[in-house]
Image 1 (cartoon, rainbow, N blue to C red):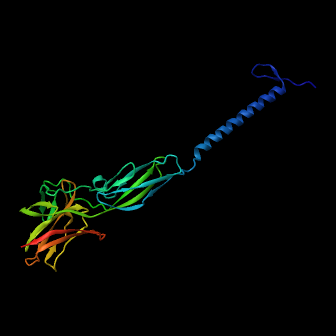
Image 2 (cartoon, helix red, strand yellow; image 1 turned 90 degrees about the vertical axis):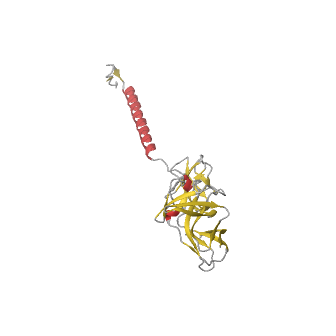
Image 3 (cartoon, rainbow, N blue to C red; image 1 turned 180 degrees about the vertical axis):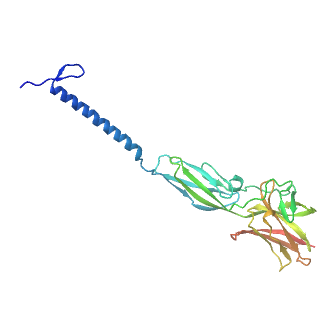
Amino acid sequence: MAESPVVDVLHGEPMRYARWSGLVALILLALVAAGCGSSSSSSSGSNNPPSAVSVTLSPSSQTVGYGATQQFTATVTGATNTAVTWSVSSSSSSNSSQIGAISSSGLYTAPAATSVPADPVPQMVTVTGGQAVSGANITVPPLNSVDTVTVKATSQADNTKSASATVTLSGLSILAVGRCTQISATQLSCSLSSTGTEISQGQNVYLFVAGYGILPGTSYTISSNGTDVAVTQPLAGQFQTLSSGTPAVYFQVAVSPTATLGPRNLVVRTQGSELTSFVGAVNITQ
């Protein structure tokens, strides 16, 4: 039996079933291929695998003395790029002079790495109602206490992955002790010495102390025989900062008229019971 011709709608020519069947097959294959490509494209955008990057930090906690340094090491796994970005922060302050700084290699430097000269220019402190405000030579208002800071290492391969360490600032150190002289009803003239100061029997004076960790919350004691030397603990407003950046404080010391003559030690203690002393800070004289 002869095949029935099929008209080519494009050219008006007869087509055979064989040619028509082959054309249909090609069209179907093209449609299937297009569908597969579309499916692959949509799935690849919605099923990204989770990042395998992780960061660990060593040490995870450390006590660092004022002015001292501490090396931290970050380990990154799950990425060929093992570099990290370092940062240091505190909820109490964003000032690097109070929280310290960290290098690109993870070396942390604690704040207050300064010194007091043996014979500094006298500091002027203005006093109102027993509390101090910034005086002529005080360049910074009373220093806020920053007890801890956070060191953080963030992965450069995946900045959503990081690790943190807690640094406790410590290391009390008394650098110099002096005294303040009342020059008017509202002003004191204060000076410091690396060898301490003298107080005569029966005197009531302001002692002036500078050093690392001299912050609100610290307490002060002078060694005595019984009650022959009394210390009035400083108020928050009596903590100041020298022009060199070193923390300082002044407070009243009352020496009994019958106090035993000779040197006395000054002891500074934090709320966490850490302490340091300055041997011979005060010498009781007649």
